[in-house]
Image (cartoon, rainbow, N blue to C red):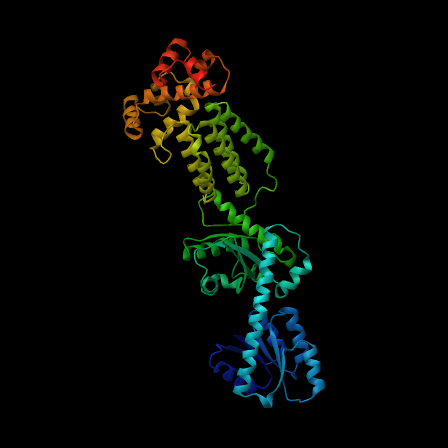
Length: 504
């Protein structure tokens, strides 16, 4: 419990300080001030739970001090110390917001301990109620519900005239984290501009939100010489070094309490944007205010159409365009995850021959996408599924950069490739070396893989389109219809026309 003792008599101050700090089982720390003006200066720097106030003091009396205290922090409990045992006097101070009125003549260890125990219970009850209200407020902010400004003022009265910023964290362990934050501030140069006055706003979906006080008076001082856009990244970097598994998103510094909603949302948005980059924190980055979602929807629709028509060459081209769009605009992560779920759903629906596994596959796929922690992880998973269903390669297999380049070139240009030398030339490798490397990593002959890939595309077209067989042969890059029919029969043990009839 943090206590401030305000009295113009030195002997009273020192006796009270020594007495309350010696009370067993209360864990009290007590500071002293000689009058109301000094007390207010201390209140601007330190957060107190209980304040003992002498009623008669020079420069500012106890009643005026209580009024000022409630203007700064309504959660603090003022206790009036007086030498006057008069009912009207006691009623006046209680009417002005004092928690208790106690005579100096009755101050002994027993009565003080009893009083402070009541204070602790009051603070705990009040703290629980306030915590619940702040958490409800936080949830509404993140759900983008309307919130009146007067509600913000009632929940954060002590922050009305302060500058502040918000940080959202993902953490493995919350225990002692608030204390760790305070220690980071007190033990660094940040204490010049960042106060250790930290308010925990709550946790929503495993993201923890904190409100920090910023001291703008130091921004332009020669001692700091830096603004928040330079200091806050350094502050976040230090915290992340101490907590390697942590991710953090930070808002800008604001000087108006009415902007708290925007700061909370900005902190979360910056945390969410870490999905797109390999970093531990993000702050002060201006995001695209207007994202052309219609453009993305068009790209996604084109991809779905490519899957439906088995136009793999165009599919890979359009997929690259969509990935570039995502990295350019960095839209909200749930939106992108949902788009990839839809894309891979269509991929499996059209390319998976065992329809009995589709239901379980979709559930597994959805869960995997939801648990990705970065866009690169999402891309890697999506490409593994694409390799498995379009390239007929193991989904979990990782290939060297040369083999990856060969696979990508085949997928994007299979209809135009007439020899494996073209593939080797494209990736600047000797043909024999590429053939040996491809066989070693995939277990398949490169020439055979290229032909099988063309025939697999042809088989999908035979099952799902009304194109002439000669048109299908031309589309997959085997213009000689007789050679196409021969190779198709070798792989599927029947002529293309019979294969089509089997699936119609």
